[in-house]
Length: 186
Figure 1 (tube, rainbow, N blue to C red):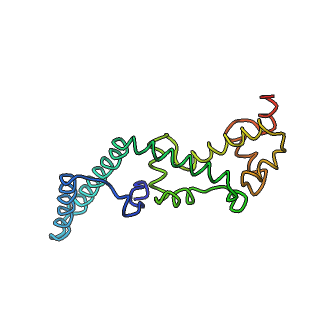
Figure 2 (cartoon, helix red, strand yellow):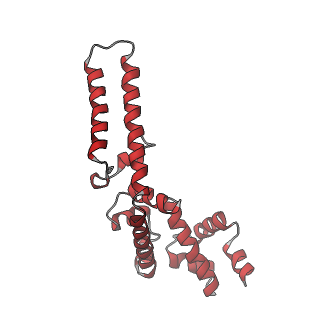
Figure 3 (tube, rainbow, N blue to C red):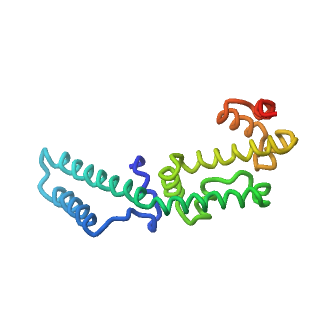
């Protein structure tokens, strides 16, 4: 069940299905109930599991389709995400609270973390955490190129608790340390 992220969505983010699709799913659920209520035999478990698998396959189809047909919505979503991140890094929140989290972002957008991450994955190919890390890397690069601040000052200014975490993330994402990056550009 954990591989089906839509089960952890909030109620208002549930699968969007047509009346016909609701009927298909309802019929399958009815078949499971019918099979369960009959006398159990050697085929019962296999038939119940097969119907549940079919329900999950249909749900996956409807789930993936909703992201395809909502591409304009996805673009609006990404503009909102970028605006929230920009505002966060330009405010005192970054100093008071540290780095923004997926939870902060999803709550600000009134969505569950899973739904936000799935929407972002559909729009950008990266989940919310990856997108936020990439956004952070761009901020680090800009700070390295536009200031002469030490890496530790940049780290604290961006909300890192420890400067080593900035260096570790930067190296993992770019293949070089912040100092190496600064030298390579200058």
